[in-house]
Amino acid sequence: MTRLIALTMGLLTATTSVNAAECSNATLKRITERGEIAVGVKADYKPFGFRDPNGEVVGLEIDLAKEVAATLGVKLRLVPVVASNRMQFVEQGQTDLMIATMTDTKERRNIVGIPGPNYYASGTNILSPKALAFKDWKDLNGKPVCGIQGAFYNQSVSDKYGAKISAFTNAAEAKQALRDRKCVAFLFDDASIASDLASGSWGEFEMPLQSEDQAPWGLAVAKSEEACAFGTLISGLEYNWHRSGKLLELEKKWEIKSTGYLQSMHDKMADPIK
Amino acid sequence: MAVLLPLRAAPQMDGFSLTSWLANIKWWQIGLLLLIWPVHAFAQGAVTVNDALAVLYKWAPFLVLNGFLFNVLISVLSMALGTGLGVLVGLTLISKWYALRLIGNTGTAFFRNAPWLVLLFVVLLAFPFEFTIFGMRVPFPGWIKAVIGLSLPVAANIAIVVRGAIQSVPSAQWEAAESLSFTRIQTLWQIIIPQCIKRMIPPWMNWYAILTMATPLCSILGTEEMVTLTRQAMEAEGNKPEFLMPFYGFVLVLFFLYCYPIAKLTVRLERKFAVKL
Image 1 (cartoon, rainbow over the protein chains, first blue to last red):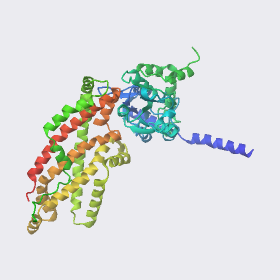
Image 2: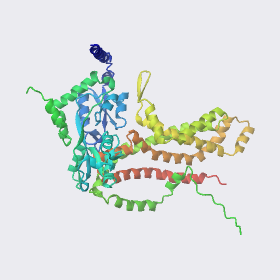
Image 3: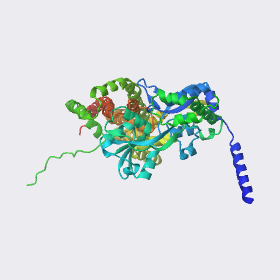
């Protein structure tokens, strides 16, 4: 009985503390006041966010940012970010929203607010020479593997399978290292590897393993906005993009190899009334 | 039989070693390098030389206008700020007050010996991204922080240059000025510093060349300069390893074309102004 009371009390305080976290809605106020939303996007991750030869940043995530700005009726200002500063910018308020190919993890949720449902998901796989004939992730044990700095899966692959990761600043350098035989495989997300293989210039290479860690990607807002108006608005937009098929449409538009995640989300959230 | 051999100064590393090395590269050496370099670079991979050069040609205007000119802007502003600060700090180094000298010496020693990248990181993280002054929102973008971060080590080194130049003026000048009842400030501004400027120009240009070559460090902090944009351009072209050499080679050529004349001129001025012993 005492335990029950304690539990109830605990629950009550938990609820009140949520209510007590008053919403200042500072982000939303700032956006309306300036008539402009600053969105942190990638400029080095084709086809999600990259530059065209005129220097404009384009891509799937930029289309999403445009949708957010249109919904709020404000101008869009794109701020190119990299993995090492993207969360800091959102925390400080330098960007109001971040759409920058970020994998949603528990640790990251302690720093920034990541409203659901997740807008994309990808798995981890390797690009390796056919001659090496890898069958299982365990085959990488003790072998040198090239990766990209700031990718969350570097750690897990090295911990779980004992691969020795050397991380490069960009994919071109990592791929060159793979060609130069400085490593036996290039660790990256499966959608990108699939499009590389489809491009035809990697004839001697393959993506031999079962994709690991199908991990969801998240948009990020400031932690204080997560449960308030702006976070809720972003949640609603993400939900609508899944339901209306907007994300599937964009996946097709930017010729991204489907990972099946968007289709399954679309089916799950489909409108029951036809 | 013991013979006194002619005394020759051993070659030594000084502040000019980089510039004089750069200035000593001969044109025929560059030509030779250009002849053999692409052969090795393009010997591998499926993308032909022409493909890679066509892609580079497409991106070149953007890379030069938005990238390289921005590096030049960063270097010019950092140098201006660093020189202003450096002259002030340099004057504290020759101050008559011990406390001021101590502060100046400590600061100079610190900023001369701290890695530039670490200084950049500290400045980037320590300053806010915008200020509010009298209700006005003043943005404080990352590239301005980069300018400040790069100007700190430059200022410390310019301070040493200033001190060295002032000390190189024969002490008779000070004594003569004193006998004509010039004050210390008057002596400094009207007699000593005008003589120093000529001697400071070569080391000053040397530091400018070093600073310019250091500006790509900002790419690590996410500032949109030449190297950042080059990486983004390669990404947009599908991250083919065959593009690494042409694109980074292009960056190399641009920086070389900019710094080589500066280095040549520095060495020439240095010879011209050298004090004959």
